[in-house]
Length: 120
Image 1 (tube, rainbow, N blue to C red):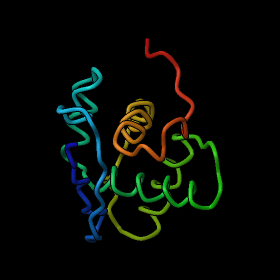
Image 2: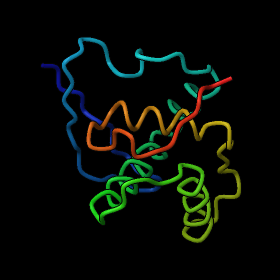
Image 3: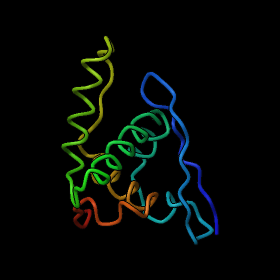
Image 4: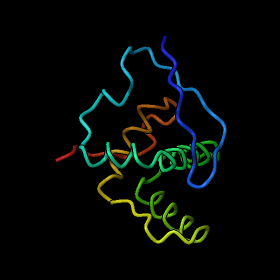
């Protein structure tokens, strides 16, 4: 079994690390075809993934069975705007389905948490 360390450097601060375990030898980012724009955004903004991961896990732990990724992204935008003076932070709505898939691939406890459709 391979253990993947989920990078935890949140927007503006660092937080603890969490491990996710998988039986596959490939990192989950190779399980699907992600568009280059999402891969670049994900690499340039690791705190976005961390924030989405922590928020989704909190929702799950609070008993929610399903949630919408777009709503999490809207909350992220609002919180970032309220907590910083950074006017440059932007996240494309087109990234939502890829973050939903990646989170469910990375964290087995989130399997099926986000509704997904076939990508066109």
